[in-house]
Image (cartoon, one colour):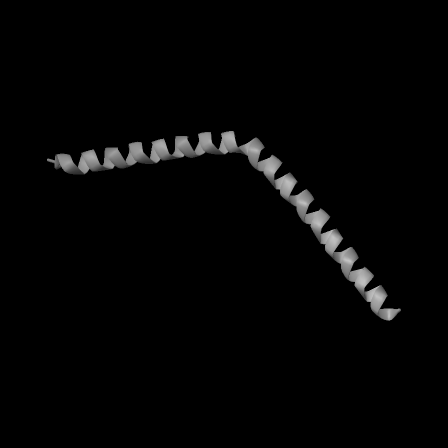
Length: 66
């Protein structure tokens, strides 16, 4: 004869895992397009600022050479 607590705990764990998985799926699907937009935005910002910084460094080097 199996103790009831064991079956309850295992069932609870299964339900918990299922709920967590479903919640994760929903969050991922909802966040997909937002994440893509954010990533592209940050990539654009990074490219813009890195090119600005590089251009500034080049200008500084040119000024020093003169």
